[in-house]
Image (tube, rainbow, N blue to C red; front, side, top):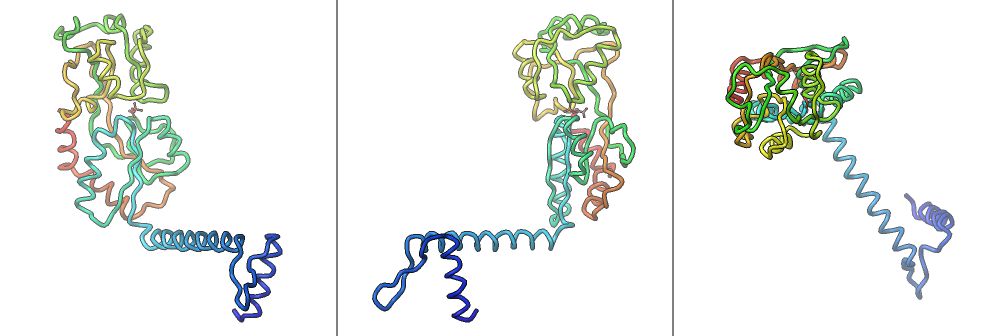
Length: 276
Ligand code: PGA
């Protein structure tokens, strides 16, 4: 800008602010206190613009190198291992992993937030592409010194007589437990409602009650000890894990690579073995 234009702009800025930005000292001019404030703020603002431009340029340069994956709280017991193996095989691809309960995951699917989802019962509405991953059996668990532990063919009514540790509303695990009680025309004696499988395991060990959980929650590296799967009639409830995507969402190349990788039989059998 030519110097007179700058002077006009500075004068207008000073008028807008309602304070002088410069003062004359002898033959020189210097910033007033207000001028120094405005100058510092402008530097911050310009730096922010530079930063955001850099981040946006990064996104524009590699939009296709990221996959957004969202899994249920129970899916977190195997999904990070799947992502770890995938990222090792494809070092250029970043994967973000969100962990939520089933209901929250359904909301994200509706809002088209993620490329891929892992559900333990695929959404009922249409418009989704569903790939079967592996079995997800749910057992009744109790502390290993519980009177029902070690018995065989336990009628469900005996489980229903025990204080029960229930997952929060919106959980797919809770839906299975509620269906089991409903199928027998019984109501659970809910001792406590907990939002986490890990907290339920701790509560079982603490002697607070029994619960119905996915076997994946009992993977060796997360086992809390002193927990036994009960031999209850009608159990395990055989569910499965599914990889789901919205059919209408354009399929990026990395998301396709992740689907293909997750469906490889050697990958699936290794993930499933780690649970047993
Ligand atoms: P959740 O997940 O209990 O963590 O919601 C299991 C499922 O999808 O059924």
